[in-house]
Length: 235
Image (cartoon, rainbow, N blue to C red):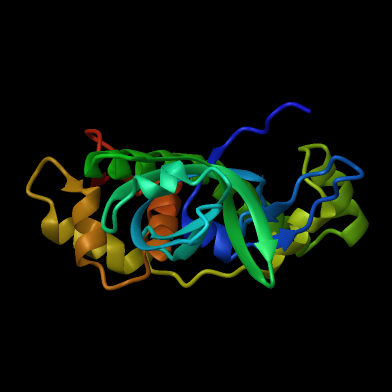
């Protein structure tokens, strides 16, 4: 079986999504459907190591991560070398498959390595760009659901490779509108060349995933743009 691509995500996308168990007999991997409808089985995320555990026999280790949007654990079995090399406070790039045990969704570790703080900003921007298309399609689904039958909507989304499970997750998700607050802050902070994305996350007293969702919407709707890498500006 071909290895699934590791999708760049935030921890919030995983923990607020819906987990579906896989099947070894059917060669079907476990996955999470995120609030915007995308299925993800193998993830690529960047976060800070906030806690670590190593078993006495050296056959198990876990790493607790926080990327500002939420917390999640990474687990390694038998080969725990990658986690041994991580110190608390390190910025870490993690790749692995999503699993679940006793109600906890975690990452079954494949790769873990230290990265520089600037890499985190780059990762966040890439995630935001990926979310733009997903957000646009999710909004379209919500609009169509108001005047289409369930069967018509299901047939429509199937032409785009989406199934009924993803549609249900999209329709059940809701977001608070923080756009006015973000636009006001951009206007206040902009001295001419735009505002650093990291500055917005630092100042806004909002959940990090909410800020990222708002920036995605504003970019998609054309209210803001990226004049330089890592900076945003109002139109």
